[in-house]
Image (cartoon, rainbow, N blue to C red; front, side, top):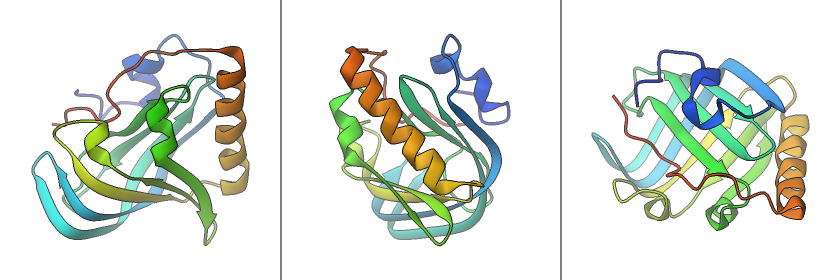
Length: 157
């Protein structure tokens, strides 16, 4: 999609959306099992010290991998509206002062992907952003906001 080297706020899926939370250039750890993605196939894969950006809007969660030297795809790793039933495949938690997003059944998001992955993001207040994500999801569901149904995982450079 060509957005990996630019600010996450320039991603077209959030151009007309209000930002509820934005963290750029945060350290991210990536781990995966039975993972297949563009140019990557691994039974188990771990990569530490990557850089990422995360945005929460009233309608969606968006995470980009922005700097990588470890074989993890750049660009969108997560882009899913809260009202999309696939959002239930994303678990949200905290561990070791990091926001942890675990995504299962990647094939439901894109035919180019398989397996599962976990992102551990070193945001300043992981509990707070986890709460913002959960509250945004509840609000979107209560308001009947549909958002745009787009693939969670984009093509990468």
